[in-house]
Length: 428
Image 1 (cartoon, rainbow, N blue to C red):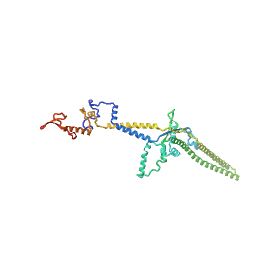
Image 2: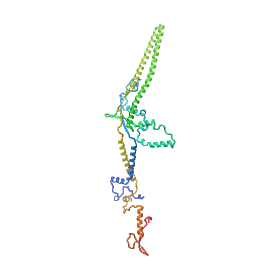
Image 3: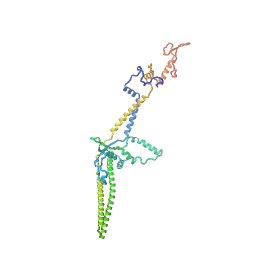
Image 4: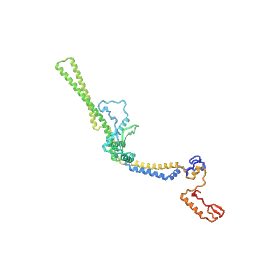
């Protein structure tokens, strides 16, 4: 029954008299009562959530994880000015922190060109790359929307959808790079850890191997490109220096040949010859210096061609032996427990907002008066059957003096007779 509106006290009020208070029950008993009362709600939530989680886990492809480690020899990393041979090496007043340099290395390993080179080498497609579970689960809905937008709304489809660019972007999210914690200090070590997720064990290993090769090659190409640019500049400078030497030599030869023909051996001519000779030697020294720097660049390019790298793969990627089925089992159990808790939560909310008075104790506590009696709640069919039996008993007209359970009244003509039972169906 619904609670009547009036000045009666609330069922949940704390000022209910002690003589009418319902004895407090333990939390376990209340929980059992709640579960018993809302068993279907709890069971439905548990079954639905558990089924959806199980179907999602079965539909998702297996996940394989492989890892590798790379040692970065920071002390052997040359500065661009040194290895290009443009300027001599010099010590900086304050060295760059090692952690900052390692951060640069990790960022370089996660750059778009590295992932693009790996995808291009293995010829990976969009469905070959690991996708997050939320992306994989919403993929059918996205495909349906694309079909609806293309065929119904007449929106032209994106030709680059799931193409090379999106594949590379998704591939960059499938692996991560981090620093390995040092075992003897608070700082990180010079070893980077590569972790890659894939849907196939062998493809995951090859993908991480391609990432390592692309990362090392990319770092090598950066320095190689700088050396090539420096080589072009030094070659142009060397050509100009050679032209200046040739010009100075020609001027000196012309001066000497002209003075010899005239037989002039004055002091002025001698000083000019000395000046021309000094200029020639200076031009020659410049040419020698430029050629020496050019040889440094040529030597570096030769070493670069031999893969003389300071980034060493100390732990190559291995083929995963099994998928992460244990994590999926934990997710499934967690989903089942979550469905059960969701059902209990919904049942608790229904109980909290249910203001109906469903017991004699609740009615007594709400009205603040003791209960006298309780009547069973009959269905419409049961009530009709009882009233029909009463009607039949009244129509039988028992003999006077018989106790039929109905009150008697005086009749002036016929004497005492039984009163007719009220018609409860008409509200009498």
